[in-house]
Length: 394
Image (cartoon, rainbow, N blue to C red; front, side, top):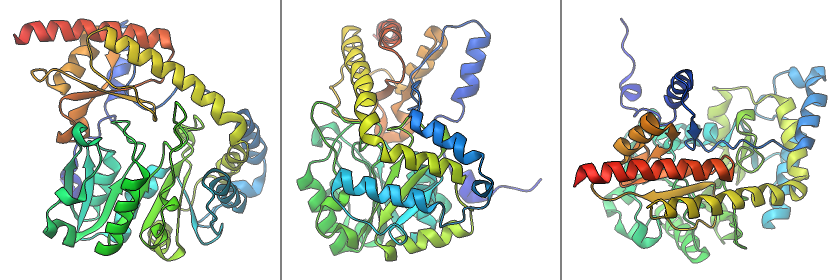
């Protein structure tokens, strides 16, 4: 029997890969399942996107190959959104890359910039697309353990000089998944300057740029002087617009930095369905009418989640952005064992921190993707498991 490649065999299990089947089995057993695992909200996409999709799907040209160019209408909507939201102008045809979701682009970027003998710097815990792209590209990941003590920021001064000299890519994601941390502008300014000095590509994953609370407004990395020399920023339609299954996103940056990604993608895909790109364009142009109301729903859920989990014995801070709580566990309770017990005994699905890298041990992630009442019920059940496991560990 032919063997898979060593690169594939070295990949970890994807943390959400097996959960749908486990969930199906629990439901088949009659368990009342509350799924707080994936960042996949139960909310509807914008009406304007649904209408535009229906219109575009009925147009024969939309079913042809989009190739790398994609739908010009979508490219232009991206540049309008970036200008309105961040005050930054991009050339629609040269400085935008349409993606089949930001995950696709982030994963493939490593194939364009990293190879055997190179290193990429990966925050841990973090989005496993960073690790997967690195390993499939043949490069070596340097896992940087995020710590609560410094606000879950990647401190380049803590990374050995020999690693920095070998590094081709630094992955940053603020607002952060899974910790919900945010990055001060002074920090981003320092990182951009260091990447310029070290000649490291800064991959800035800004998937949660619009999901912020309490007056906080996440920036674009391109609000920092000099970022165009070293950075590519990724955005997604998934979280902001409740369009996770539509698979549509984009990358922006200088034409020269984007060109290797465009070249890689030309050998891998022929573009997202252009009717989906048309729908995404409509959503982006209508963002101001949709996003604020959507975020208010998530704020209500966030507030319910913070209160409920604290009331049931857990320690967590109130996140200013994202759709996640990053919840600490007592030191004697492993996160994987806790998540497994919670799922099997109480029917509540969460993501153990260890599944996002060893740096995530001691925490678990809750996605506030369902109603406040269901979140409160999940927290109550989680508190029961915490009590049982804590008592057993004594």
